[in-house]
Amino acid sequence: MTTNPRNTRSAWTLAPVLALALVATPLLAGEPAGAKASPAAAGPLDSFRALAGTWEGTNSHGQAVKVTYETVAGGSAVLEHLTMAEHPDMVTLFHMDGESLILTHYCAMGNQPRMRATTVKPGEVRFDFVSATNLPDPAAGHMRAAVFTFKGPDRLSSAWTFREGGKDVFTETIEVQRVAAARASN
Image 1 (spheres, one colour):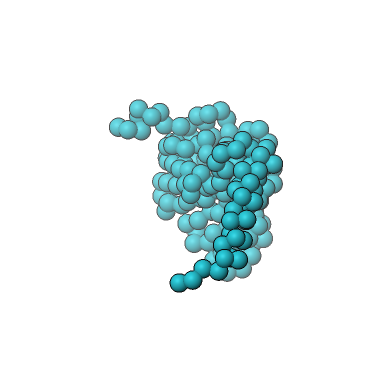
Image 2 (cartoon, helix red, strand yellow; image 1 turned 90 degrees about the horizontal axis):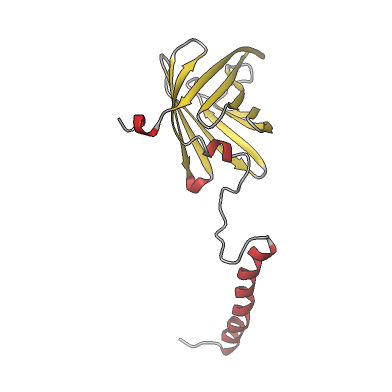
């Protein structure tokens, strides 16, 4: 195989430029050289990352609820697994979409509402409906809004609004407390 000297010179000329770009980019972005960029930068998702672990409590009807939160996908998403008495398990995935915090709720109704955080303030995040998959028409029953209230590091409340026929039908409130690590291992 023959090597074209012109291509070799171009590669060697370009190498220092590429190396400088790799070093300078974090510096220009305000990061120290060698800092590893996190796929999950600080922001509204951090409140949900802090929930990692097991939580127990009750829903609006006094039924037992168990919720686990797990940081997944290299820290870029948080998975909520919800178990309520007399209901099939459900999961919700929280992640960023640019500057917006998004959730997708995989509901026992068989649809998957997607909501965007419309209010993010200390101690509270409100999500409102954007779209849904497996929703046969807009009048079909689906979760329309969710409000998460962070009542300290070990207490959380969520209120999920269900809409059907174009009207909000009910809001399910879930109150949970973090399960102590020692208790969770038993």
